[in-house]
Every structure is written in structure tokens, then in C-alpha cells.
Image (cartoon, rainbow, N blue to C red):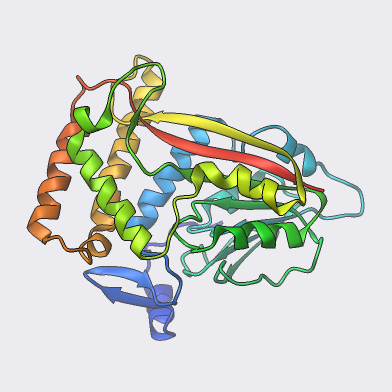
Length: 314
């Protein structure tokens, strides 16, 4: 299996086919999807690091035991997994290795998944704002992670998962809370402790709001309940350190790596935020100060909040 995307032949093809667009020194999807981030190699590397951090944090490619039980092998039937917004395809490939008897389809608007992959994997260019090609009740497992920056109406994701999942099939979701916070064990005010980091996230959230992208992470379980076709709705919360403050060596390594992801994210989202009434110099100043804040090892307990969970189709 070849997973190295550092050749440009395929990128040139997709660019000529109108699927990719280069601007502001970065490469973006040329589609009309609201996704605001680039999809070039720098961003792909950040996405892959973020995936590995979460996999280490939750010790699996999905939360809970039930999703894995749904994929237990059944004689005469191939289990189908659909990953909505698969990005670089790393999650899909790891699931294919874990469940070699399943068939896994990764859907994404950007053609950045590997050209070569196992026979039980398929990558398709698809806007997840639109209906998929799968028939009603034909899928066993739907995975939707980091979709809040891709769809303006997250309920579409839920309705589509409800449509294609068979009874007993499982929907797994995961989104970041987009604001700084400290671990629940301490009583610290982010506005007082990391004011520039808060300014950055405020700018990001305002720009996303104007772009029509909702902050939905902690509302997903409620939305699932409102649809009326899911049961066993199980929300789960995870906290990942930002920086190297944690007493546990493994968590310190996660914190350092995730801090690096945040810094790269600030660079990736810069052209998008500059569409607000802010100068490039002011934005650079805010980010530089925010990076100093999250580098400060004397500022313990700063964390990112990953909100995940699953639900079962009735």
C-alpha cells in the first residue's frame, strides 16, 4: 500500500480538472463547499498528526465498544463503513486493516486520499452536503468527524446517516469545541490567563459564523435525539493537553504535538480570517502572542475539548 502523497502528478491532474485551486500561496478545494481550509501537503500533514493524537488519546479509531461490535463478522454479509469527510484517508486505511472483511468508503470534496489502497477500500470525491449514492438501510457504520467546518446544516449529516444506516447500524461523531478552556479540575478564567489565544478563537468563530458554519460540537446528541430515529445516544468527552504541562510523560508528548497542530492551524486559517475587518499585521501580532501563551509551561491545565460519541439506528 502506498500512502506517500509527495508527488505532484495527481495534484496537477486534479488542478487541471478544476478540482483544486491555488491562492494565497496554498491549495484549496475548487468546489462550492463552505470548507475554508487549504488541502495542500502542509495541511494534510497537520490533519494526519491530529488524527494520530486522537487515536492515541482515545486508544482506538472510534469511541466505545458498541461500534466495534456492530462490525463483527457475519457469514455471507460484508459490513459497510462510510467515512464522511475522510480527508487524507488515514482513518479509512486503519479501519481497513482492523476490519479486513468490511468494505470502507471514504468521501471527501478534496481528492487528497491515496491513489493506491487495499481492495476493501474505495475513495470517492463527494460533497457531504449532498445526498450520497448509498441506498436506504445499506450501511452498518457511518463516521463523521470534523464536519462542522464543512456543512452549514449539520442536521443534513444526521438525516443522511439515518437514511443509509440499517437498523442497528451505528453513527459515530466527533468535533472540537472551538474555544480555550482549562481542565475541569481547576478554576481558571481563559480570558484572564490566555487573552490572545481567546482573541484568536473569537476571530475564528466570528468568521465561521459569518460564513454560515455553526458551532455544533456539544449539540450533536440533542440533534440526534430530535431526529427520532436513533437510540442509545452516548456522548463522550475527552481533554487533550495544550503544551507540555502534564505530569504524565505520554500526555506531555500529546500536548506538545497538539500545540504544534494549533500553531499550524493558525497559519492555515489566516487567509480566511483576514476577510474580516482586521489587518494582516494585527492578525500576526495576535497569533504570535497566542503562541507565546500556549508555549508557557507555567500555564498548566490548558486543554482542548474533543466532544465525541455514537448513536444506534432504530
